Image (cartoon, rainbow, N blue to C red):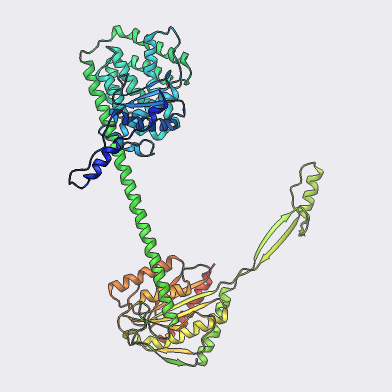
Length: 598
C-alpha cells in the first residue's frame, strides 16, 4: 500500500466551510463532520503508530475500514505485514472522535482496543510459519492453540493489557461459538481451548470459567479434557519461532480427538449449550471488570478527596502562619493594645505602668538563671576508637595478641591502640511564652504574673543570649507586656484585669511566631494563666493551637487560681491556691522544659 493512503483527507471542502460560516448564527444545530471510508485512514495510521509500542515491530501496516476482507473483526497477515481492523468495532464513535495516537484515548473504546491488542500479540509472537505440505487440519489445531498462547506471551511484557484482553474475549470468541466451523466433539474442544486456555494464561479467572469447564467435562469426559489441558498448557511454553513443536502439539490434539470421539455421544443442541455457557463466562467477566472499575474509581475518588483535604489543610496552615506573623508583628511592634487584625485598639489597655524590680525578684531571677544553666548543661560525649597504629593509648593485651597472630602466620586483626575523642555538647537555649488572661475574673493573677514575667525574662537573658521570652495580656485585644528581644528587661510592667471576652487563640499565634515555639532545638514552654471560662468557639480555637504546639514538642502549662477554673484539653493543669506561688511554678516548668531538651 502506498504512502499517500496515510495522508489525512479533510472531512469538508473549503467551499462547504465558507457556506457554513455564513449561516453559523441561523439557530440550527451545529453541523456534524461528514464521515466516509477515507476518514478511517487517519485512524488506521494512528493505530499503526501504537502498534509499534504494543508489538515492538516497525514493519507493519494497519488498515482500518468498515468491514474486512477476512470477514473477522480483525486479522493479522504475516506474509503481508498487515493488521486488518474493522471500523465497526469503534461503534458508535465516529472517526473524528477517535484518536488512538493519544495515550489513554483507548479507555473510551476498550473492546475495540482489546481486539487490537490481541492482533498486536499475534504480530509479536505468531512468527512461526507452516511448512509446505503440512496437514491443514493439524495447522488449524495449532492455530487454535495459538490464540491463548500469544495472549499469555503478551501479558509477560505488558501485564496492564489484561483488562483489554478480557474485554475483547466476547468479540473474538462469541462469533466462533455461535457460528462454528467445527462440529461435534471438535466444537466442544475448540471452546475449551478458547476459554479454558485463556484461564490458564491468566486472562480469565477460574471462577468465571466454571460454566464452560463443567460443560466441557460433561461433553468431552474427564480424561479427554485432562489430555487437552495438558496439550494447550505445553503449547503455552512453546517458543515464538518453533513451528515444529506447535505442529506437534496440533497433531497430538487431533490424535486425542480422533481416539476419544467414537466413544463420546454428541448432544444435539451442543451449539446452544456452548453459547449459553460462554455467555455466562462473559457475563461473569463483565461483572468482575465492572466491580474492579468501580473499586478503582472509588479508590481514585478517595485519593482525590484525601489530596484535596491535604491541600486544603496545607492552605489553611499557610493562612494561619501568615495571620500569626501579622499578629505577632502588630502586637510586638506596637506600643499599646491592638485588635486581632493588627489595628490599634481605641481603649482597653491593661498596662498601668512600670516599676523597679524588688530585691526578692532580683534574687529569684539570679536563682532561676543558675538553675537554667545547670539544667542546660550537657556532659561531654566520648567516642572511643581502636586502630593498629598510633596515635592512641597502647593496650598491651591487644599488642601481645597481634604479635601472636603475626607469629602464627595469620592476618593480624587485633588493634592495640585506643583513642578517645571528647566533644562538647551545645547547651540549648530557652523559649518561654506567657499568655495571661486579663478579663475581670483574673484580677488576682495580675501582680504575681507581672513579677513572674520579669523574673523569667531576666533569667533567660542572663543564661543564654539566644534565649527568648515574651508575655502577652489578652482579653478581646492583645497587649505585649514583654517582647522577645536580646536585652533583659530593666523594669517590671504592671497591668490590671478589667477586660471582657477572650482571644487566647491569637495570643498563642503571636507567641508561637515571635518565639518559634514549634521549632526544635530549644527548651520550649507556653504558660497560659487563665480560668478558661470561655465560649465553645473560643475554647475550640485555643485547643487547636495547643494541640499543634504539643505535637511539635512544646510543653504547655495552664495555671489556675480558683477552684471554678476549667481545664483546657491538651495542657498540663497546675492549680495555685496562692497567686504568689505563680513565679515559682513558672520557673520550675521552664527548668523542666530545658532539661528535657535533647
